[in-house]
Length: 412
Image (cartoon, rainbow, N blue to C red):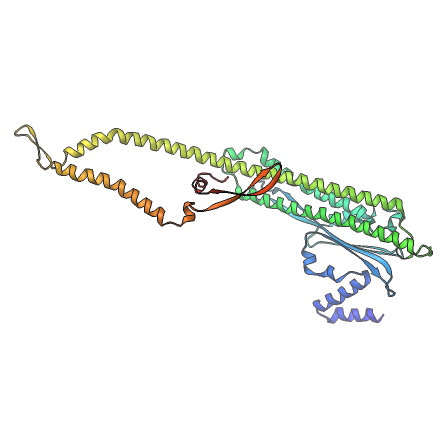
């Protein structure tokens, strides 16, 4: 009564921070919630499973608590404009369970911020569907039922992502207009997130299965050590949990583990299909660029041919237009200056000097550049495969012949 009055007085006079601290302390004491569950990194992680024993004042096991967190990401095209960026939303399942030897069962489902009521109703229905008393003897009965819903959410997430990828595969827009690379890469980003949370889900289910095996082994060991007491519960008295239901939970968890792994492989293959479409778009753009470059090269080739055709006549016209030649209409004859040799004396050396100077400058530039840039003196070690084994060999080769070819390949 005094605690209730103190709580009421604090609710009227205390600030939000103090109310939160008092509420958290009472909540933790009532349901045996460990401090680690309230940490910030625990709230922001993408999935986990934890468990620990509940001890009474005599340091005897009086219960068992578990906590878990699952996430899924759903991606879908914009309903109003399919050409816009993809819509997405997160679904989070955050569960805390308390199992006591007094057969008291508490399951806390924490609603996510901006979460849907549908998810909470689905969790409630999954836990209460076909619930029988014998299931309450095993603290992992919650996951026996809950993981089916978690896998349903992951399955829906994968197929929604697959529908987006399939729409891209069936679309032929890339043949008529530039691909929307930002939209494609945003979808790839969503795919990376889905693979991430699905991988964590697989690991979380493995941890749940390992936790269940450890609990069964400890319960069986406790049953052998304290079998003389039959009125106490299985956890503290030594009564082993019902083998039939324990085996059912173990087999079901194993099935969920395998199913989650198959979901992950399916998601990875779907993500690879999206990567293939992105690479195809890059290659098609590169192909268009190559065709445009080839067309431009043909135009330059035509201009070059035209220049070559007119070059001899231009050269002849340029020579005869110099002051070394003169046509006198009165004498009706051409007059050639005796100094015409000066033209050749200057033109020929200059013509020879220009390519020679260019070559000398090129050689000087190569010699003054660092040795690594020329690839001289640099060596790389390699591995040789022999009889199926990898052996480190002192095989070395010059990379000077490799570097000049790197720039000729375009990354797509």
